[in-house]
Length: 302
Image (cartoon, rainbow, N blue to C red; front, side, top):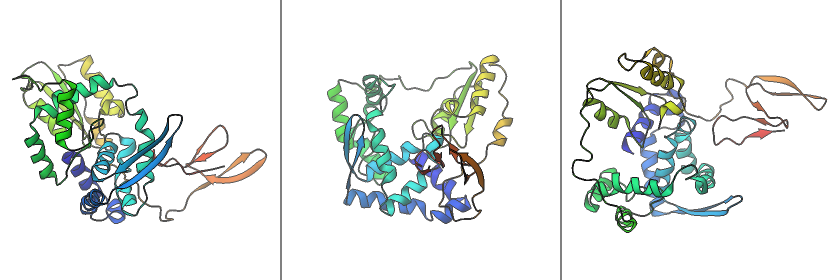
């Protein structure tokens, strides 16, 4: 959590547009977490065809949404915007997150996921250690879906599930000279870069690659990461080419449009009528034009 948030705060601070649009982002965020813990809000949204999803949004919930956003490059760019939207009473991003909640475990075995989370994470610590971690972060709880509540609740739920913590030595570092490729995303809140570096430290013939615009599983989203993986599999004894890393531009966070530069318009023919539309908007088969500047952007004209 701390690793991913720090990466976002620093990346925004060194981006002049982001720093101007969202000043003092860490203070704003943590103040907002405390405010929502003190005064939670209740949000509801329709999740067709399942029904209505209603949740109490507190600081832990906001923390979960923001760290969840940092898992994917499609959502990383939205995180500072979401924080400031919530600060201004705009909960549209949180409602969008609610809509996706019933589909959270599509393609995932919930039983396997809960067992893994309990054994490798929750029960790897004691309730007292978990409480100490929460105190260091300045929060009462962290939401690891499907767990809700404080750390004591999570610990109790895992015991009820029948899980046990890792066996003695199970999590000791692997020491090996087998050629290994370690790939990390700088924003990843699930397996942050320092995890990968710890692994690489005891793998004497390892190659460590970190992708500065990625979150979780860079090979699923970044062609440079995929190329490195393919080259490694083709010849594990040779370090993959790193040159494509030099062409990766820093994350460009979404900031409010100021009117500069003006939109470039293009003529389009629709049902016999010529119209001017923004040149970089997407045109659908049924003649809607979507701005689509982020996964949360529903702006469209027809």
